[in-house]
Amino acid sequence: MRSENESDGQKRRSFIEEARRAQIVASAVEVIAEVGFAQASLARIAQHAGISKGVISYHFAGKDELMVEVVERAYGLVAEAVAARMQGLSSAGDLLRAYVLGVAEHMRGHRTQLAALGEIFANLRDAGGRPRYGIKANEEIFRGLEGIYALGQQSGEFRPFDRRVMAVTQSSAIDNMFAYWVAHPGHDLDAHARELADIFERACSS
Image (cartoon, rainbow, N blue to C red; front, side, top):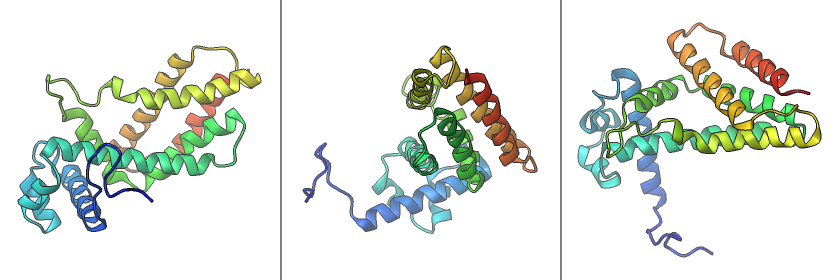
């Protein structure tokens, strides 16, 4: 049984606190997608959620912390969806395809969330005024893709290539697929994802 406190010494949140934070995050996503990052004030988010601004301030130190929570929750859900799609697969090619199709399949049902993430990535800054989510924030994604490539190269399924170059290229292609889909709502995201999976599977194969 776990103690009442988390391993880092912080008190564990109750079910009610977690539910309230989830409600605030959901409202933040809706507001950001509708009015943009700059206009998504805590007061506006609170109004959307039907709570006072003070309730948000109780759960989050400020707008920046709330934005980070929005991103972390979104990426956590994507990771779960992709992991489920990869379950039981052993071929590097199948894993690569499952990665691309899994991300697309999940985000197809979360267009509003995707629009909000785009606003956050473009506007949230760190203490030094630099983008909070620049290329360095993708390190975990790059390493995950490199793991798939390494598996394929070790088995002989994939040809020799620079795994970091391929990871950066594939990640950028997926990001741009979603950016295009948000800008063109009628675009066939599933067909795009299948084509992208074909491209990278062929690019990696021996």
